[in-house]
Image 1 (cartoon, helix red, strand yellow):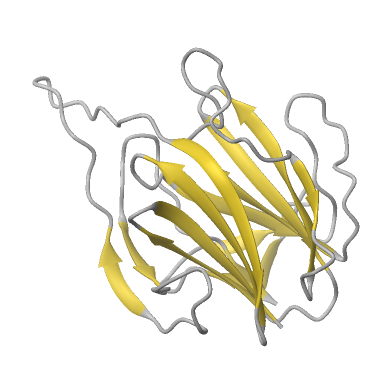
Image 2 (tube, helix red, strand yellow; image 1 turned 90 degrees about the horizontal axis):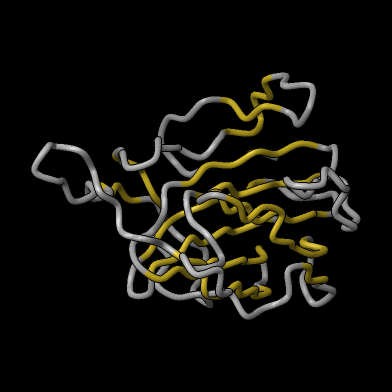
Length: 201
């Protein structure tokens, strides 16, 4: 199984051991306020068929008079899931622009970033989507009304997901999968802004 945003990307390291794994590719990442061209797999809707590859360029953040990027706040507003014949889908909805994101994966476990406690999800492998966003606004009010830990028995391979980190502009969402996953694909869409994760089997 490998994680593929399409296009060239660095090999995905195992959690903890940090050993490169050639069968899993990391999602293209960008530093805060900086954006890069990504090759993405377009998905027309959350319940669409398996996507095909196409290239797209992510727009740069607005600039100040001093030339420094000033990204608008981006907040998680919803997490949706769907079961399809050949893949499970997880969709992260955001207000504002699609945030810069990356991924970490491996056959270890998921942990909450503040406490280091293990997330109680069973699976043979675990993947964490890391984003430059938040699930609360500048006043501390939650922007994501859903549960922070959700089990998904209705899905074929994904056993559940959790918000594993929401701290100082870093928001992570992790999920566990059963054996038999062949690939994990990610893409971004707008109207609304969202990150789509397809778990193929």
